[in-house]
Length: 353
Image 1 (cartoon, one colour):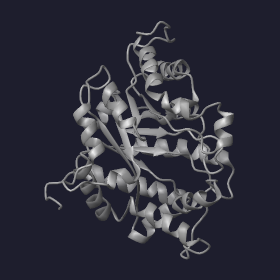
Image 2 (spheres, rainbow, N blue to C red):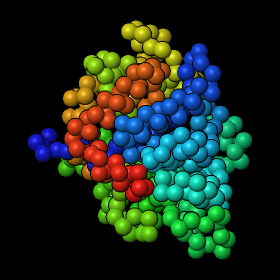
Image 3 (cartoon, rainbow, N blue to C red):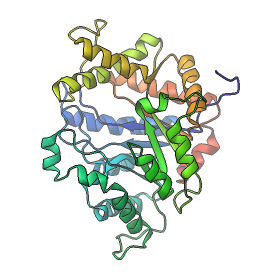
C-alpha cells in the first residue's frame, strides 16, 4: 500500500565502484571517478564513496584509501568514504592509520565503511593471505579498529585527531547484528532491501534498530540503503544505463570473471544463456530506474519500507554522459523536495554526519 505522505530519505549519496569500460584503459575509470565526485559535490550529494575489489578485470578500484585521498583533494565539502574497506584483507591498525591520516588531511569529511567480504576467487583469496576464518573474525577486528580510532587501545594511532570519522558496517550476513552491538551505522543493499515482510517492513533493519546500542559514533540507529538507480528521459533509456553492469554480473556467474562494461544496443539479450538472461532480469528487478517522476515514486516507496536515513546510489554505466545526466536528474529530485537546500549543503560542508 502506498501512502500519500511518503517522502524521500533525508540525504542522497553515491558509491562508485570504478567500473572499467571496453575499449578504454583502466586508468580512465579512475579519472572518471574523480570527475563524477566533482559533479556530485556540485549538484549537492552528501557523500561520495569508493569500494575495494582485488584482481577484478571490470573494476579499477582496488585501494579505497588512495582513491579517497585523490577525491578529497579534488573536492571541497562533500564527504568522502569507503564502501567499503574489507577488513579481512587488512590489519586493523593499518586501516585505522589510513583513516586517521585522511581525517588529518581533510578534517570532518572522511567516512569509514567496513565490510567482511573475501576475495572474488580462491586465487585472489590466496594472494590476500585470507580465508573463511578471517571473515569470521570480523567483529573482533572491528572492535580492535574502533579502539585504535578512539584512543583506548594500547597502541596510539598517528596522527591523533580531535574528531572521529563515522564508521559504517556493510550488512552482509551477520554484519547487521555486529553494527547494532557496536553502535555503528549500517549499509544494506541488494535484494534484501526489497524483501519486506507482511507488515511491509525489512526484518533485518527492524532487528538492527531494536538491538542498537548507542556509541560515541552514533547515538541512534542510522541506515543507509544502497540500490542501483538510473534516471533518464524515458524508462528504456534509464534501463539501458543499468544493463551493461547487469549483463557483466550475470556473465560473471557463468565465467567466474566480472568483465569490463560493454556498450549495449537494443538487442540486449543476444548472446545470453537463459540462466544469464534470468540473472539480468533479477538484477533489474532490484534496481530503480525510469523518468524522474517514476524514480521519485519508487524511492518514496523504498523509503517507506526501509525507513532509510539516507540513500546510497550504486550502479555503474558504460555511457558516461548518460550517467552524469542521471546523477544530475536524481539530485534534482531531491532538490525539488527540499532535501538539498542551502542550509543542508552548508552543514555538509562543515563536516556534519
